[in-house]
Image (cartoon, rainbow, N blue to C red; front, side, top):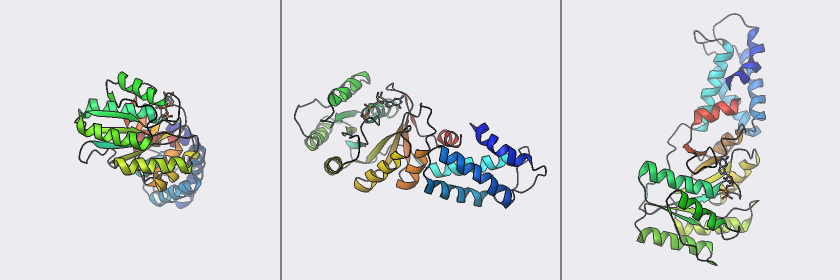
Length: 296
Ligand code: GDP
């Protein structure tokens, strides 16, 4: 992944033979290439501008380390800066609340909410020995509730029995009551998505949030979606308030620059990465890995 940006920067730095500190002119020229790389990776323009400014400040005057050339030095600085911006802080799912702890899964239809709900359930069961209850609040998409039930079975997790005709807020209430009664540590609420954000969806999710009082509200977004996901993240954050991002389809070939934009624009950390369709194909977020991809 480094080769690409390295290739771009190669021509610029080939002209330099002397070692020493990175000059302002060299850094400016290099950052033009970084800017193009980021825009190509679907990072939002405002975020690109901020990023380049920060990276420039770090790079100018920096001594080139022994054993590497100036191009590699710039790449190192840019990469470190990207990791810092993506977030190297705590990304564990917050379970610090009186059990049953609610995790609210939100996002557009097809983003991977249902799959990720089951994946997180399985991960918490396996790694943290938590007793997890899954509940689908998606009464609109045909068979969505059954889909979660099937995934729960695969993961050997319990899902809230489906009562046909029950409305989302009532399902959330019942899930929390069942969570309490059954001694569950965690209740994962899989909300309905729409193809586009609409008022009704937001109102419904807000009502569910008020009932469940989640410790985590995770926005599930598809890494392949590009810049549109930034608006989605902004909307959900303004209307619902998100505490983290679950990025799905990280196994695809998208560069995933939108992840950086979402993090920057909402301030919510990326916590989870979906890396395949299978129920155990989930990982904690690795800023390092995503940074390398975005830089190309
Ligand atoms: P929802 O509408 O948001 O609940 O989305 P689903 O959970 O139904 O997921 C939509 C499709 O994306 C399904 O076919 C999933 O198998 C697939 N999917 C979800 N997460 C991932 C992932 O991390 N990688 C891949 N390759 N596919 C995924």
